[in-house]
Structure formats: C-alpha cells, structure tokens
Length: 101
Image (cartoon, rainbow, N blue to C red; front, side):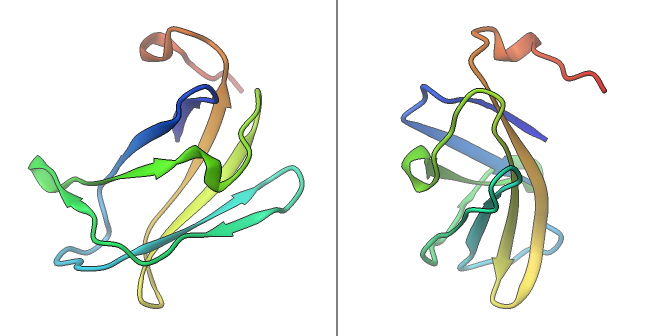
C-alpha cells in the first residue's frame, strides 16, 4: 500500500513489477468508494536500482481527498505487472504514518 498526501501536485510512484523488460506500461486507478476509474496513457517507466520501476503520477488524474482509498493496476499490454492500493491522508509526517486495522 502506498500512502500519499492530497496536497502533492505529483508523486513518484515506485514499484517492483512481476516481470521485467517493460518498455511501455499504463495504469488504471479505481476509487473504492464511488467506483470512478481513470486509465492513463501508455508510457515508459523509469528504471531504478534493485529491480524497482518508477513514474511520476499526476494527482489530477483522479480526485484525492482525506481518506480516499484507491486500487492501482499497472499493465504491460493485457498482462498485469503490479497490483496495489493507494491511501490518501492529510497527515504531514508520511514517513512515520501507519494504518491500523
């Protein structure tokens, strides 16, 4: 789960894909509360160290507010290479922020 702040104009999304040699990917975001879905254009992710890939995700792709809970699926063609969740909070200390069930 990635934890983000709604006030960020853009955030760097870093992930470890299920497969490598990904030249182009796209992602879908789905708001769990209202079912709104956003699908990005195809793009080339940045290659990081230790098998991570990253890209800058514009927050204007879907409306973020305190407590927003989104699912993200990243695709290479029709194949899902990453699946996860994004949680939005207005807390200022994201490094030490934790979720409790």
